[in-house]
Image 1 (tube, rainbow, N blue to C red):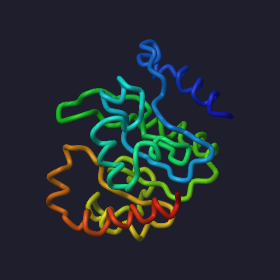
Image 2: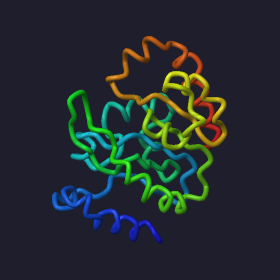
Image 3: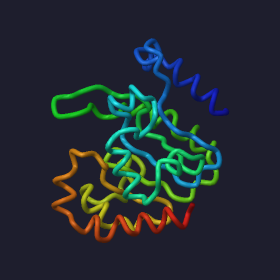
Image 4: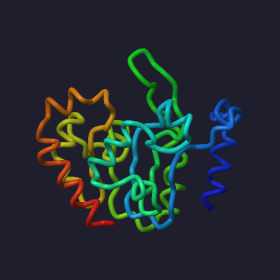
Length: 190
């Protein structure tokens, strides 16, 4: 299957009808030449409006952490494949979790289109749990702190959301150790 066929399949999926009826396509950035893959949670409300992945404050922070500019971030060298390709809605304490079927049914098809991926950056607990499974540590903090155990294939990081500022302040090692290593790997791959 090619990207257009997979996109059509996603849009025809009955479970995505409410998005398709509003003219919202799946929000991702898939390139067959991509060398870095970002797997985050799901588009937020702002991203749903712009239809551009990470086109929000989280994206700005992520670009800083990666040490790249928007031109590079939105180039064919970077692929963005969230756990859900649509905004899942608002819950009591934040956005609802990504719908599990999206990754289960569509990720593998999309991954086949990107044979040159050299590192996958897992952003936040949903992608970390899904892709690292039992290899993940007991919580997000420990998994991110031990990022080197998952290289060269995966690089787990915390979500760059402004809501995670407290986590970042409580874990200064993230900026001191993890971010410089992430920038080094991104630069080397690109």
